Image 1 (spheres, rainbow, N blue to C red):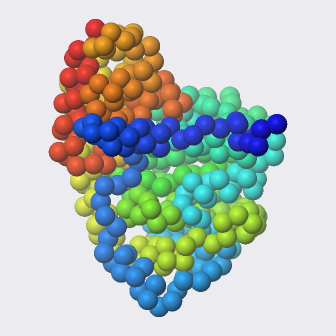
Image 2 (tube, rainbow, N blue to C red):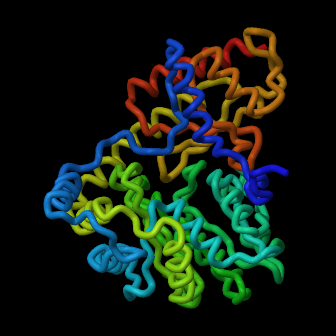
Image 3 (cartoon, rainbow, N blue to C red):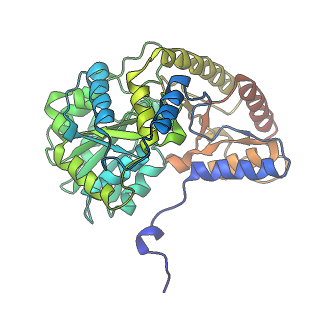
Length: 399
């Protein structure tokens, strides 16, 4: 009998973390590797946020806090939702966890029973299906191809909803594609979901502030008829370059928030008190740098998209947000690399690219849509220029 539980056997290690680990191993072995696999900003946490954390340490703010967030952080989150999304919440509608992933995990564990279905549009963030499986639910994948801009077709969504559907997960701007849902897009999806009162919506808004060309962010909780069925997740990781601080939060129905607190009370207890103090400053302090950083990401996106589309065999859409592109390598599948190895899949493509030309990217199949690969351009322009030259050279010599 195995010591490992059957539920754990259902899931796989994170492919994105696996790529980063492989790149680190090759670097340690002395190889020149450029990693475009990590999903985190390359900027540092702003100084005012760091100073808030240092002050919390010096003030002795180092004890247990309320399980699901300090009152002052919940207040900052409430103000954020009102200021930026015109949404009203009370403290008992807010939960704080150790990162956005933790909040999503808690929500699924707190609400799913065996046989419950969760609709997940693909391409998806790699952890969504495995979190659902670990919580005992059944992921139902809704493919959204490049012809529809990697976004949901409401007619296809309606076809996939059943009596067993408990959740749908929305993510805009999207990881891995950078696709953004406009207010019109969201309202068309909402027209479908309004018909099915047993379906809840988890809106992953973690990339809210990484958007370009004047894109106006709109979240589905702003649709009044749906607000009571929406859990809106966000955090400080992406907008404030605080991935390692591990603070995510969500607002939603009191019953779900209370259930999440129960799960958290018997698992992690509270998130770090120091990180919570830093998050208060992140949300309440200056927001001026956010647009500056988004403008920097946009310049990198423009360069990467053009460079990719200049490569024979590669096709890349121009996304409106996040710091990823999701180019197609379908035209190169079936060719052979410089070692004579046939690239039968997108996984073969990215592995050969890493081993032969030293660029780490993530295969599209890890995100539920084969024939693509994800590039994170959250790195220096110098690295991007080198990486795109290497990718171009790699593709040029495929036969």
